[in-house]
Image (cartoon, rainbow, N blue to C red; front, top):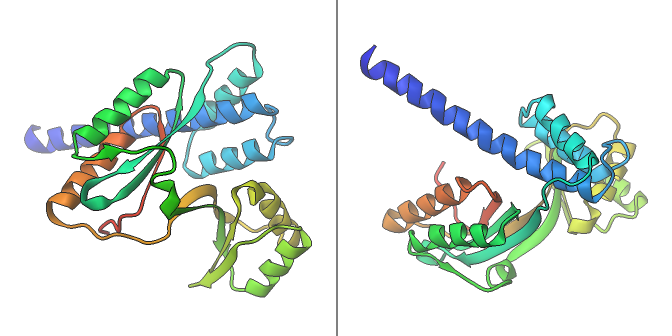
Amino acid sequence: MGRNFENRKNAIFKTAAQKTKLYSKYGKQLYVIAKNGVPDPEANPALRSMVEKAKKDQVPSHVIEKAIQKAAGMGGEDFQSARYEGFGPGGSLVIVDCLTDNMTRTIAEIRNCFNKTGSKLGSAGSAALYFDHLAVLSFKGENEEQVLEAMINGDVNVEDIECNDGKVTVFAPPGELYKARAALLEALPGTELEAQEITFLPQANKSLDGDDLTAFQKLVDMLNDCDDVQDVYHNVDMPA
C-alpha cells in the first residue's frame, strides 16, 4: 500500500473532519433558530431559510431533523451568540461570530488563535466599523428593474441591486432578509437562491503577501477549526 494509501487515508480523515465541523455548525444554528422561534420551518422563515442553506451544503436530513426536534423538546443546551473582532497580520481586519455554551472556553480559544499568529483582539466595533453589515440574496437573472419593482412592492428597504455576469444580487439591511426573500419569490416564483445570508462585507479590501499572508491563512484556519466558531469575516484578498 505505502505512501499512496497513507495519502488517501489522510484525505478521507480530513474530509470526515470537515463534514463533522460543518454538521456541528449547522446543528447549532438550526437548534438556536428553532429554540428562539417556532420549531417548524413552515411557520419560521429564519428556520426555513437555514434548512434550505444546510441542504444546499449537503447536510443530511437526519442532522437537520435532529437539531429541530431537540429544540422542540424541553431543556437542552443554552447557546449564546458571541462576536469577537480584531486585527490580523499586516493590518488585516477580522470578525468572528460564535455560538457557545461556555463563554470562558470560547474566548480562550479565540485569543489563542490571535496570539499564535501575531494578531490582536480588539474591542467591540473596532473592526466592524470598516464593514457593511448586510442581508445578501443572489440568484441567476438579468432583469434588475423587475427585481427592484419586486422589492418596492414588498416594501423592502433595499440598499443596492447589482446585475453582473447573469447574476442578480440584492443588498438590504439585516432585518429585511426574510421580507426581501418573500417579496422576491412572490414576484419571481421558482427562483433558486444561490445565496441568502446576513454577512459583513468589507468597505475596502486589503492585499497581503509573504509572511503576512502565511500568518493570516494560519489565523483563519485555526479559527475555523474551533468548534464554537460559526463564521469568519475579513477584508483580505485571498489567493485563488
